[in-house]
Image (cartoon, rainbow, N blue to C red):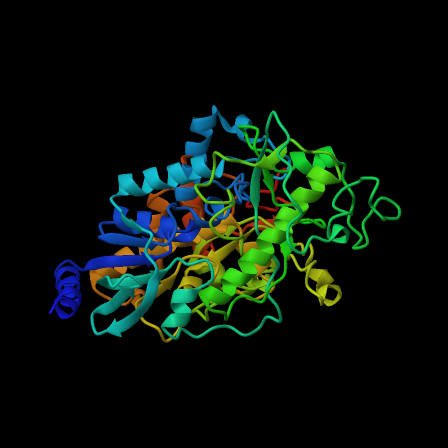
Length: 498
């Protein structure tokens, strides 16, 4: 009898208290989606496998924010402000040269947890999604441990778009290969030798050109791939965190790995994880045994994992779902040749940056290394799958072209789009329609209420007098921005400065 009654008990309890919104995956976008949905009155649940919220910002260890330093708005701005408050101001966050905002991943996880708790989001950690079934009134969700839930709107906040795949959402097929992943490591200086044994598969040739050192076989100060060789000190200061820890996420002959991971099972991906970890441990072994950094080791005070490494790797690319809108490089370069800007809900200022160095086909993909575009806006339709009602996308699996993913995959953009998905979900619940039927302007008004950028105009920032009107005039086409590519932080102004 027990084997029959227990599942029925779970079903009865969960169905008696359905949620308005369930977010599968408490990552960068999923957390923002849940917070925004809850703040707009929707009862919201996050189902997350790991003990932390924050995804690539925290659980994957990419605790150096890429881009949007001058475009801090909405929940992304709150997150940055909280970090600055923790460390003593924004200048304290400029501890490494790769970013203006660096932090310990554990601190970022605390910030995400605090913001979610204050918003009233319910979070179930250690919960693995197994499947979902569409119903007339929404979705029924079940987990690996036998729990069942009901919700009106389901949000895919997974790193790779696994929920969308599980329910049959249509995917874009315009790419030829995923970007390299990285198994990041957070290391620190010890007062004693912490050298590790040689990891499985170690090959010194994979690392000898990571920096300028006696083992490098470069010519003219560049490695065989044509990249500049930095000094060991510059290489390590790249990801130095405010507390002195170091993020090892080095793209030059170090810990990037290539795997076609999208359509594999969790068990198959685990095998890839092991290989990616060994690639990173090999990099650390090279630093210790070949360059003499014997006191540099995996931090023992960041991740509560057996090996001290992050919960999962940094995925630069997900399965991209076909949406009502698809963002492209052409739309970023020439926004006024398209109408996507009128539906804008998020902004970015990063170039088109693809990592394909470890891919055997890297030579034919070389043009993607640093594609120049101005700062850009992204339309709401990228989070709304076609032909799959009541499902929204809140992480990297949005509807973008394969090339444009190199600029939209970054943490600020993902967090902003997650916030937009959360606002859309709450509005759909409130007015009792499908998300695809919610007027875009209503979502934009909610986002403006919460201090978000819709267009990347640098003339005024949230809180400035006239900011909201400038944004509203921009999406209405009454004013137009002038964009330009400026290194790693591109710009758009209504009135270009001298």
